[in-house]
Length: 228
Image (cartoon, rainbow, N blue to C red; front, side):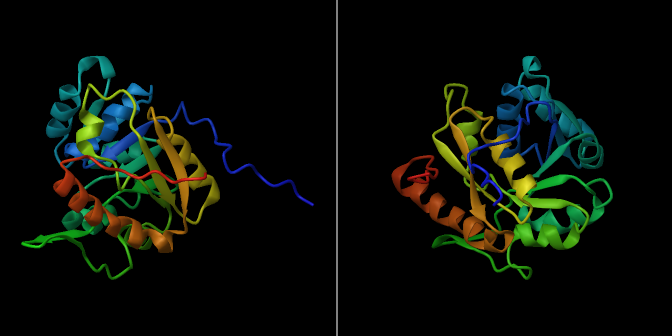
């Protein structure tokens, strides 16, 4: 009988470079900052290389984050995180299919709408943003993660450790283990396997609940998974 793999064993990802597409937004800059603090080579991507470089420099010269246009950032990094607005999600990924081929692509986009009642989950034809990414990037290894990380917390220099579990979803065991390990490089964070990519919808949608929680309690709430 084959020996069962310990689900808590994670690969060493310390040498991997990370690109954050849409990295000029708050969540993108926050993730870039935390991965740079963990010692990774980090590239912020944007439609404008100049804007990306400005965002990178704004994080502090000591972190060594650099900026590039989305195409160059995607091509140069080992792991690519997609943190773009939902409206431009599909168009961007279709344009970068060649640059993202054979790479782990981490989708953290939440398709949400807002009206006078507050945030709500949008219906996505493919099922979720992560599944849409999988559909337009058939040569990439798509993983869903980092949906519930507060940008305010990520960017706060007073927060040394983040009290948070990151749910990681995907159909490729090696890829999800790699992203779980990457999440765990952020001080205080655990990467927890959250199921197959087909289950990404409810994880993305739960962001609307978290926004409602944060508004009511004036907080920056996240998730912790018990008994794991």
